[in-house]
Length: 189
Image (cartoon, rainbow, N blue to C red; front, side):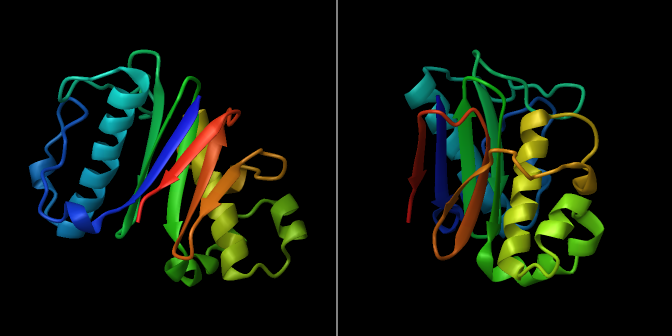
């Protein structure tokens, strides 16, 4: 099982942010678009856990492992991602990772290419376009979230042959890492 939901964040402006982890103080987040994107991702996650997995965690009941990755709840692994305008939640019966980025911001990432691409990636993309780089970046993020180990070091994450799957609209790109057999993706507008 691997289920992903991608949703716009605008309907969540002003909405409360569900508390997932112990010790969180979501009220401390002042930026309204960040609050909305967190609310959207967390609401989507709670809906997937409840409706697809039969799991309803109590507020603040989720925990993180020693590397900061969310620990499975009720045997279900999950991953979250959000941008200013979109949010994603993924649930799976094995480790999973999802990363989301907006195509409109692809040029912002391109300047990082030389610093974060592996030698293999640089040989495959000697002059990457902004979209090429966005695909590589989201793949690295989703692989990192799936592995859940150590500090994020993009240059140490090889995307070649990684099996990352992509879902996209004209506005947003999602990279999905994990056992994607039987994957189901919902993109809400």
